[in-house]
Length: 111
Image (cartoon, rainbow, N blue to C red):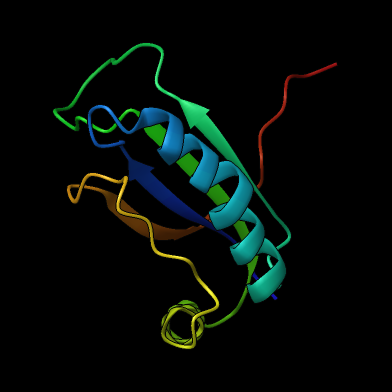
């Protein structure tokens, strides 16, 4: 199986930040990790923008093992349709999601 990263960039609706973080950390991540058999997930907060115009403040990276990203996304859609994924009204609609796979080995510092 190929190790992939599902990337999601999102922002909370103004005034709903606490609800957004509570849903994302305590509902959404556990539902996806446990319900779809992911290897893990982690969230990040933007601390400095270097280039680009994206306005999203938060990043989630999901670790997915699959040789069929389209099939996985179909499973995710079916999971959402079945009620396995709780939808939140705290997220701005201008989010971004994409699936990536490594195209080379991970480079680490020389000893």
